[in-house]
Length: 222
Ligand SMILES: Nc1ncnc2c1ncn2[C@@H]1O[C@H](COP(=O)(O)OP(=O)(O)OP(=O)(O)O)[C@@H](O)[C@H]1O
Ligand SMILES: [Mg+2]
Image (cartoon, rainbow, N blue to C red; front, side, top):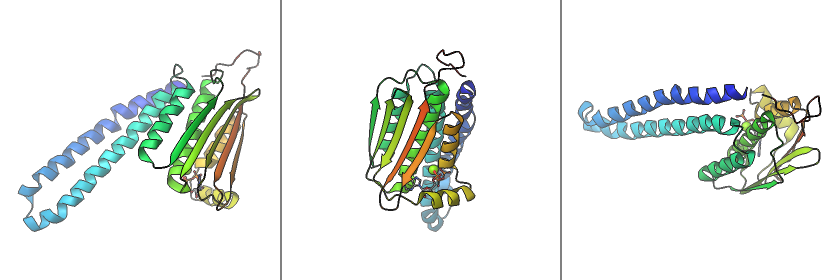
């Protein structure tokens, strides 16, 4: 799966991103030709719409690029999770006013690729929820090496929500962000907990066990 993700990153880069660049160029060309194509009255109306279109294409390009990079970044076994998390924090701070802190306690070298990818994905989901839904002013990610494995918690000081009610409703509408996280953690033999209530912020807590493999050796799943 790790190789597949890496491939996906490259495919995204070479296929859709290339097409998107062509699309952006075409929109720009059309906008530039507008003075010849349209009467002055129409031009005034059309120019801002073309500009908005261009902006949306650029935003889409940025988002896809981030995804492509995240695949190749998070999945490369050479890169420490530490470093990958730092990149996520920097990317978040660039697009958000919410203050975000990252604490990493102890070495995370013992994590298997699957565990690393899972943590990366979970942090990604948590951060996009904080950005989209929380109304928080600050948030914190804590990752710690413990005797049992790894503990991750992600806390924000935002609006909070009624967990049971909201997640059932979200799942019905096909929004599977947190439900997907729970499933991913379960598959890796870990635990996952969402603690939140209206007016009191949100806390995601998860643990993944130290992988020892059937023979007691450090596992290297692929
Ligand atoms: N940090 C948070 N603060 C406040 N509300 C949250 C937070 N995280 C999740 N929620 C609430 O829980 C709902 C479900 O979140 P979930 O990530 O499962 O789905 P989504 O973000 O709505 O959609 P998707 O993740 O599929 O794009 C959200 O719609 C939101 O109402
Ligand atoms: Mg979500």
